[in-house]
Length: 117
Image (cartoon, rainbow, N blue to C red; front, side, top):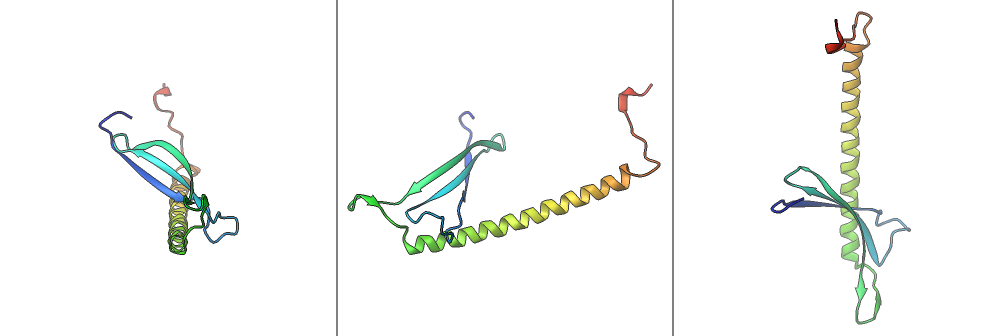
């Protein structure tokens, strides 16, 4: 990437915040940085963020309102993931149907392009 390229950063939560394995003092994110000029990923990032209480000099638990927002975000992520997985399956099924109708016929002949003589 070179200037004056702009980037877009997409984040997603790694763990379900309601899981007993999810940390209570922080959270993990995966991010993808996309180059606007090239319209492709420029970098992938893993983030480990921790809430810290500088007065108590120790890690602090995530406030309840943050946990609620993470739960909502996680639910939206999972809903979007299910939707796009269904769309991908539908597209793959339609492509396979087209392939079967055109390539898998008894009278189908392979066109070898410029190799013909």
